Amino acid sequence: MKKILVVEDMEINVDLLVQLLEDDYELVVAKDGEEGLRMVAEEKPDLILMDMTLPVMDGWETTRKIKSDEAIKHIPVIGISSHAMSGDAERAKEAGCDDYLTKPLDDELLFQLLAKYLGG
Image 1 (tube, rainbow, N blue to C red):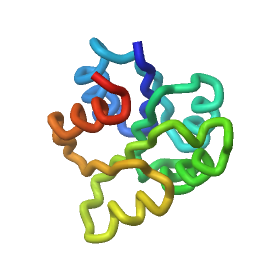
Image 2 (cartoon, rainbow, N blue to C red; image 1 turned 30 degrees about the vertical axis):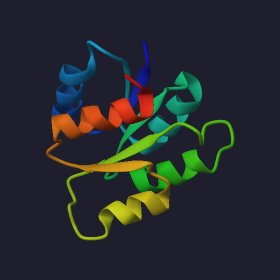
Image 3 (cartoon, rainbow, N blue to C red; image 1 turned 90 degrees about the vertical axis):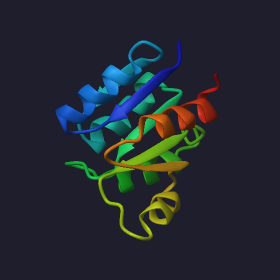
């Protein structure tokens, strides 16, 4: 079973993702960017769902650190944000995100991206 690291500080969003994904994926959760960065190294997930607005270390900085580390930079990062401003998707890609979704999440689009990066 493929493993997804969810880096998200809002419990309601974590609960939604767990409900959507727990039948098909192993999920591990980090509540802030610093914990997320540590868990990437420890858990070696197949994909990361990264909220961009996080306490301690935001998703932008966390993603940059992941993508600058040779051991983990190959792991796809899908940035997630409630910000739907023009240029946010480009900013996320510049930070190293492989893709970007806005909240509220479009379930169909989420599953399409998971299939793209994880197969199936």
